[in-house]
Length: 70
Image 1 (cartoon, rainbow, N blue to C red):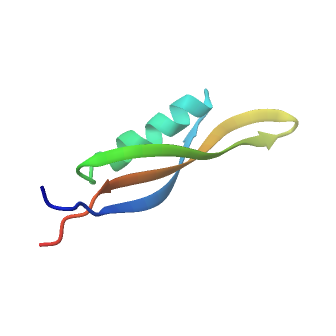
Image 2 (image 1 turned 60 degrees about the vertical axis):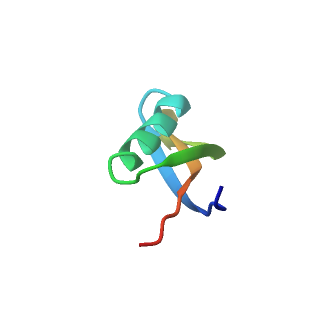
């Protein structure tokens, strides 16, 4: 079995509802153009606040995918 190489990228997903939805949005959007997604690691959670109210949840995700040279 040949050795594998993976590339890691950092993404930030957003959602007005939850951190989980924000992470899902980041991964599903990346999955539209990146093949062979492997692992998603939550790196940071934060919220956008306006006038003392939470208006958005943000999730920073490290996402790895199999690297294939052509």
